[in-house]
Image (tube, rainbow over all chains, first blue to last red; front, side, top):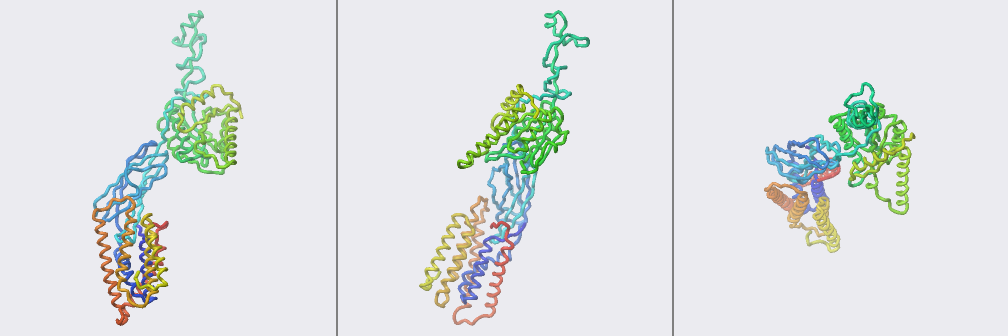
Length: 424
Length: 156
């Protein structure tokens, strides 16, 4: 443990120095008598100072929680010699909360007897945290020194976003050749009825539509839409975020992306991820429950790092964006670079849908006449960007955290049903 | 402060004492350890001023003044330290009180010896003078060296 002098040591030393120097210079022996108690305490404290030996063991009862859930954190302290009082402070990263006991707290330690403390740690915001930094501080019995140490029992705690369970989904224009649960627009073997056509040699008998055949006097067969899977790429715009006391656009975007990934992967689609902002991160499309963990783990590291570099689509590896993939962009539309990349994606032929995470709940109107004017202009600029997307046939729907994502996806699907696809 | 102060110095001494009392009260109310420290330094300064302004004769109440200041300072620091929530050992207050009383008694003996050796009519002692000079030098050296060893960001 590292030893530091307390303010009390400084004050008592100043008093003793003042008294003794005053006594010597002014010939005032009374001053020696006045500062004698402080001198005695200083002498005793300096001679008898011994650093305490404390062993600490910290344990976090879990590595993964969902936002709002909690895990137990236990701390066990053992001292070689009795310690009158040890002060304990558990470092809590922003995004986590702690209760179940005071923090900081203090307790006495008996020699060789372990003392246990426990807290409940709440995951308040998704993220990857290092939890378990504990500061210990012991004051000596005279209050002249304190001894500090940092216990680095850092354990990784993953707080997963509390994502909605979605019912609606955006249906991709193109599907892959392999089987899945997306009803393809093409015709082939499947369950979903598509059309009727005259029987040709080679058609299976069980596909004959007997009712239609009886009415027309010749054999007709049912055609169906095959069930295929699709490539879905979640595009997270992390160029900028709007943040308030209760959260931010990035928080909501990550929750939305997690919900979408879980739903599409549950339907056996291949899901990829591109995080484009201050840093570029990507995940190649994959499928299965393990891939969901990879996607969420990548999302947990999402951060709106400020950057002035003009990043574009050219930086994204081509394999990350397979041809014909449905790209679902989750963006606050706050940065022109992010907005430009989306137009570029559309121009290059990818099937694009934009979920705009509204920054409005996290903003306040600047004071004064010009503040209100500036806010109006900013809102108009945002509307202009949205209008440009709509003219190009890109579905763009505004979403606020707290509103069901299902409703937004239905709105996207409705737009795409009637949208006219225009190249930029 | 003794009652023998010079009439012209009394307002100054009273002013310094009043500031010290205000600082002590503020320190206790706001759990501000620095306020307690400054109050203590100013109180000793006030006593020094009173002595300087007074006629040359030995103040027999000096050891009592010293112990009173010491007790006040210890209790004030103790009060400030107790503010955060803490689980205390049941015998901690008693042990601490015993320590304070022991230091006060030892200091009384030391202060009595110092006053007796400086009483009028006693021959000057080279040994005591040397010890006093050495103690003063040690205290000043410790005071000068303290800021370098203080924890970054303060505290304590």
